[in-house]
Length: 318
Ligand SMILES: NC(=O)c1ccc[n+]([C@@H]2O[C@H](COP(=O)([O-])OP(=O)(O)OC[C@H]3O[C@@H](n4cnc5c(N)ncnc54)[C@H](OP(=O)(O)O)[C@@H]3O)[C@@H](O)[C@H]2O)c1
Image (cartoon, rainbow, N blue to C red):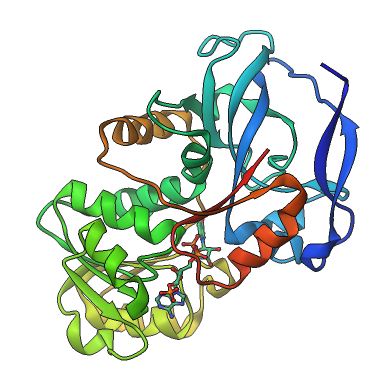
């Protein structure tokens, strides 16, 4: 193994063209860490927001930096004290979020307690597409929303990275799911098991969706404000885009209706990755890879996600 590797480096915040492929040293694992040969890296909206210098991850980032948090690959070497993994095992996880994840590179250092084994039947691309979106969906529905079987949930952006996974987790739990997407994605919503698909371009969800126990909102702002109208008193609105965090107008309206609002930030967890791996292994969770790009085309991959209209996930194959 050469001690240099290819990586997509961000030297300055800005457009996708600021991501350049360079050769940098292969890092060494410290205690509790794994060196991974990265086979695939998932791309999330937080990647391009950070590239643009926006959000919490950008505040923490020291440039030049390697972006990306979702990693699937093989264990190459182990730091001291690593007990859960061996060399050559395939692993996946969301690395070090919201600190630098260093995913867009041939090799990456990760914490063993944030990773899990990839089931034999799951490809590296699907594994890389899973962590951040699936951890978010799980936390939003089951930790913040306390969604239980028989309850009703409205999932906005149900065809997107988080949404298409959230729909499947909610159905697995036995909930009734209302999901929003443009008409062209309603085939996917039906496949995923959405009970009531709504076209946000032509249908007003506040008129059709009623008595919801939980709303998962990946859109934010006005959409969050309107979502309060469909919740039962005691219901929970979980908001994903952090730019609207603690918006007083949303908080006031929620308080007047007896609804809870939670802005969440996803946390890495190897234990939860194991639960997700089990669901992937038995087919209760199917993560859809919409497009793949080679590392060299990382800019194009960012631009694809930045359209805000991917169905499922975009993945870099390394
Ligand atoms: N706080 C956290 O910890 C956290 C974690 C994960 C994600 N997030 C944030 O959550 C948001 C969603 O993430 P994601 O990965 O799911 O994004 P994504 O995959 O880029 O979402 C794309 C989807 O959004 C749908 N969409 C666009 N406008 C819509 C609208 N007005 N109503 C309903 N659906 C609409 C699109 O469907 P159509 O093509 O049919 O329009 C598309 O399928 C992002 O802002 C992300 O940064 C936050």
